[in-house]
Length: 330
Image 1 (cartoon, rainbow, N blue to C red):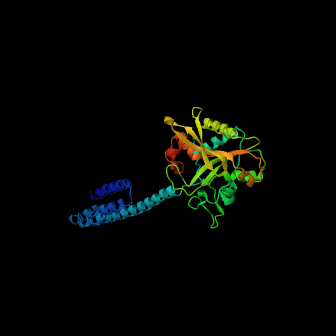
Image 2: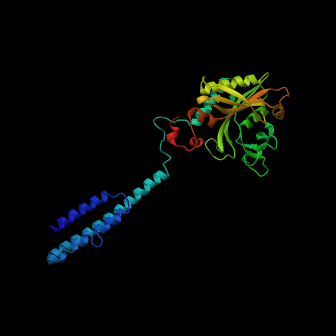
Image 3: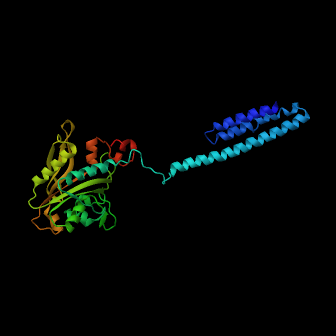
């Protein structure tokens, strides 16, 4: 009868192991079955009431029970720890050989989609895409674009310089691509230059030290401000819809003259600024050795700005946090 009781106790011990979810629970089980005041102690206390022959038999059974429980606990603890660390390592160091292709296919980032859409709109007008380096010279970023020495954009508080002489930097605009393209190509020129740009901005709802721009340049015989206006009105209606109206208001940019900001009519009759533009300043053409009679216009638009307006996004950080709950909406 006593040995049958031990079998029942061992069976209950195995059931307790199946319920373990944390390694600390094993210590409690060990105390319950093997420690002071445990099930084993209680069974040992019964030896005094047995005959000498039964004492030997039951004593041997208790010894075997103790060894079996201890052995099972040791093996279970080892396997449990191994399983725990495998799961932890799998989370922290995913298997990069796994085929991660989703059955639903991959999706492009919202900013990529917006950039490509803008480029396609201008491509339909005959523009081509031009690219340039993100690490630039101060000459391409400022001097060639007619930016005076005193201009705030040159301050170290506004621009991320790469050397102590302030001769190289992370570009603050993709207008640098326009300069490089004109240095290598004669008119006519019709290009858009998409890419990342950098400024010493503090992160807030509408500003980031890294963001994306698309700059455009058109250089050809007889180009006027009317051509600029017509081009940008076409772009706005293609991107935002034909019901959206535009308004041009005077502004100042070192590299264009005259210059303007483009505003679009928005909800509740509000006018919102979306881009800057103007006729290319003659000094810019002079810096790239174009004839004095050269005419052209340029414009620049923030990609994040376009996306935030179209989709009603309230904070620029949403684009960079890689939160699938946000990204999968687009």
